[in-house]
Amino acid sequence: MAKKKKESVLQPHYTFDTPWERLMEDKTFVKVFLSDVLENYILQQRWYGGKSSKLKYIELQEYFRIQQNEEVYYGLLLEVNFEEAFYQHYFLPIAFVSDESFAEKERILPLDIKEQEGFIIDALNLEAFRKLVFERIMTAVPNDTTKVRYHKSHTFGATEYRSSKFMGLEQSNTSIIINDAYVMKFFRRIYSDTNPDYEMSRFLSENKGYKNTPSYQGSINVIDADNVNITIALMQELVPNQGDAWDYMLKELKTVFRNLEVKHIRIDQLPETQIFSSLGINDVPPRIIDWAGLNIFLKIQTLARRTAEMHIALGSEFSDTAFTPTHFNGDYEVWLKNRLLYQFQNRLNIVENNMHRLEGLSLSLAKEFIDRKNKIRQRFVNFDWTKLKGERIRIHGDYHLGQVLVQGDDFYLLDFEGEPESTIRDRKVKQPPLKDVAGMFRSFHYAIYATIFNDGENYPQSQEELFKAGEVLYRYFIGLFLGSYVGLMQENNLNIGYIQERIFILKYCMLEKAVYELGYEMNSRPLWAVIPLEGIMGIINENN
Image (tube, rainbow, N blue to C red; front, side):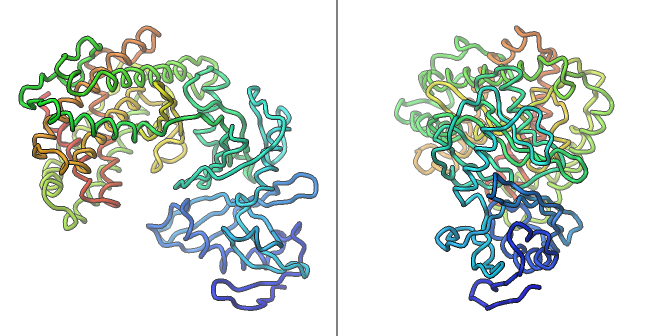
């Protein structure tokens, strides 16, 4: 029986006459823990994705032990139900500690069990727990059939645990650096299926030997009561790096726009190129190279090659049906249109309900977006699979500059979880590889406009002049990327369609990505909605 021992300013203090090893069997404890404690705790966590909805109640879907010898922790699979009649699942590992110095962070509940005073905490804050799970992976046996399945890659070579620390602030997951050599990512939001990040990382590393992603080292999966395999942790090598490509690109673009004044560049005399032209480095005019510098174009070529190599690896499988290439068909068309029309209507509603938060260019573009809604909707409807001859494969799915690490003159691609708004099954649908390319092109566009918005007052040119220069640069960026990417894909016989098909898919996917981005910007920073709105209207207003 639970006794509420005393009240503190922050939390009540409970007493249970049950040892820790059997505490989750105590129904009274579970009821109190879920309703009185976790509801308040979970709302404060960075990884909690339900902040925009009203929490109704939390259920314990199930629990399992994470243990080694006498050392016992619990893994909780929580179902968070919302007033809006949907739910999300989360993974929370918990530990009981009697030493208050171990409970300084992520303290969930002061608790007495069997007359032992202590605290329940998030187990990831306990080094002993981090050591235990690393050692369980290190000693994992092949073909594990237990409920909690630890797996190690054949490339995993560690023989002892030395140290661990948090990697840094993250929104949806928690990553731990171990031995300064590995990153173990614990997935907080979980799904009734293996995580795509785990699947893709393991496939690229172990099956295809793809070198430009952090190599797969191990994982932890749980078999739930419905016999579904749920990924709770992924371990990869720690890649030394100089940060992500988004920060790198912003830094480079600041210099590029500063060069307009430093090098006395006449924006109205900059040579232009047709959008979606496939260019080689020799096709970029000397005046453009002089303005932006050769290095940024060489980097884009390298990124294009690494992207193509990823897709070649993903498209060269013929035995594992989860990865074998396939063609477009009617089922895919129906799935795609239903998904995108629903998403478009959602964004339309958000814009209509938030017009009062917009001003200037954002407001005028939002009005145009609403005025042209039928034409945008028609663009999504105009997907005819019978005219497409290319192949669909498993892709990254949420590909942008922030998902790429810079290492010297090279790049490493990471985070294969897919779009956060998509269901776990939608993330595994085979897509045209050009959808990833479209995502990167949208990221180039974002970086250019973000530089103008963030630093525009530092340049003597008007915003309109900077936009014009940015659009010229953007076309050379994507032209050079396409030239390198398409050439390598064709050399390796991965069918991405002929020129007109490629341009259709790129425009279609870029429109989809811009509409997707619009929701985020309208909800979090409305004045930046101008970037996806510019992208949407740029595609819609093209003559061809």
